[in-house]
Every structure is written in structure tokens, then in C-alpha cells.
Length: 404
Image (spheres, rainbow, N blue to C red):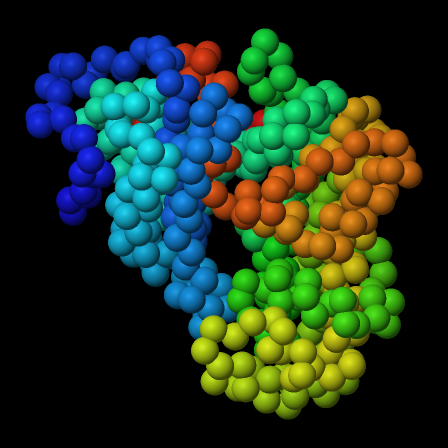
């Protein structure tokens, strides 16, 4: 399979294998890093200057491809990345008004994520770095989400009090990290995680269960404002130490579990005989072209709206409660929240409100940088570039890559 590179200013010949074996030294001239993101179902490319200024940020979404299935189909995601990566990179460079020769480095998501999807981005970035003799920088996707918040803090000219407790909450991840910068390098300690479904995954599954659209987060977020969040008394979510054995430094108090809550929603649907109304709603929405959450409002009765609002409240309450407990336990001076679920309105309101009560600053990324994007990858690559932390040509995708 041949991957085409951007056609703007390509060198006429590739470097010899002996030249390529020597990793280029990161010597900054423009401060521009091209970031590439393909860990799941978003093909992203962005140019960021000095890890602080987003010059361009282009994303090709696959929502329409996966919507009929109510979730990401890995094989389809890989194919979409193959089709999208060339025009997305080209668009990012054109929007930035720069050529390939202006870049200081190429950054790419190494993992975690879907193996096939990651490979598309990694192989493309490796080919570009090889051809241009530019440094190649591997970035952990989870670290990228944290740097999306740092980008916002820099944009607002705010300093982030350290150590900071980072909640990364998305469709594939719900993790807590204690993060601190030392001599320009960020260090992370994983202090909490989900033992089953991630929060965003639970939103997707409950949305599908209720006959709503994909991705589930925006649908539930929009409909929840029309329901009573206390109508269905979902209790606090607790995780027993057994059978889940927490890694060292991870207290069961800071473990998340949303599988049981999802099952509770299913049981509620069964007990209250909601199946026929759900199927009718699913059929009606399927007939609409590019259906939006607002289209579902007239198709939802009060019971469904209350169930939706109560489910969201239970998820948000659990995330807020355990995050602030962890912040207190580890003496964090601030909290950052990132990932796709960080765009949820109720979650933002509750975190900010609780932060004000505790006089603990809480920072979110800009809405456009909450979901997967390449700007966060380029931003996270900057400290590595400055430190000379450059990947070799043996770089490959790491679907289960951990952070901290």
C-alpha cells in the first residue's frame, strides 16, 4: 500500500538508508510542529507553534460512518483514516500558510487506541519524517488530552498551579493522573482509572439502548436538560477492592466503574416496559437525514427524559466526587479535566462549582479541543522536541500504551 505525502514542497529524492538511520537533531527555527492524530475515529492534523499557539487544526470526523452501528467499527475506522489523512494534512499546512520545509518536527499519536487506526497515522508520519529528514516525535494520546488544557491555559495567559490532578474522560478512557512539570519535562503518575467501561463509552451505550444517536454524549447532554435528574434514584457508584485489584498507589476510592450503572438503566427500561417506545424512536430518527439531538425531543416522553437526566447526573456526580477526593488525598493545587466528556455542560458546571467551593482552580480545554484532535498532539510534542526526545525509525503503534 502506498501512502501519498503532501505535494507542496516534497524533496525530489528520498535520503539514503544510511542517512535515514541517523535521527535528525531537533534544532528549532520556526517552532512549528505538525501533529497527526488517528487513534480512533477522528483523522486530525494541526500545526502548533512553540507548544502554545494553534496555527491550524483540521479534523475529519467519522460520525456518519459509525452512527448506524452505535459505536466505532475498527476496520471501517482504519479505512476512513487511509482516505482522510492526505487531504487533512494538506489542509492543515495550507491553513497554517506554511510549507513542509518550515516545520521543525513531525509529531504523531503512538497510542493508546485502535491498532489499525494508529498504524495509519504512525506510518504516514514516519514516511514524512523520513522523506524530509525532520525529527519524529511520538506522543501518548492521554498526554495529548492533558496538553489540550495547557493550551487553553496558555491562551488565557494563566499559570497552572502544580501539582495538578488531571482527569482524562472520554469514550475510551477514564483516568486520573497526578501531573507536574520539572525542568520543562512533564511527569505523570496514574492514581485512578476505570475498571470496566469508560464514561464516554457508557454514554454511547445508554444512548443506543434508549434509541438515540451516536456519539451518545451530545445527545444525552442536550436531552438531560429537559428531564428531572433526581427522578430515578441511582445511588453512588462504589467499586469494591475485590475482584478489582488496584495497582500500587491506586486506592479503590479512586477507581471508576460505569458498567453497573449501564445495567441499571437497562433494568429500568425492562421493568417500565419502555421497549416499544424506544424502537419507535429509533425508527423515526433513522428516517431523518443527519438527525440532531433536538430532533429526538418530540420523540421522548417524560419518563425517558427523566431517565436520561438521572443517568447523566449519576455519571457526573461520580466523576466529581472521586476527582476532588483524589485531589485532596494527593494535595493537588489544581484540577484539569479533558477528553470528549469534558465538553458535557453539566460536568463543566458541577466541576467549576465544586472548585469554587473548595477554592481549587479547575481548568477545561476549549470545546473544540476537548474531543480528539491533532493540536493537542503537537502541543504535547513541544517539550519532547526541546528536550531532544525524538523517536527512532522503529516506532510503531502501541494500542495499549500506558501513561505514568
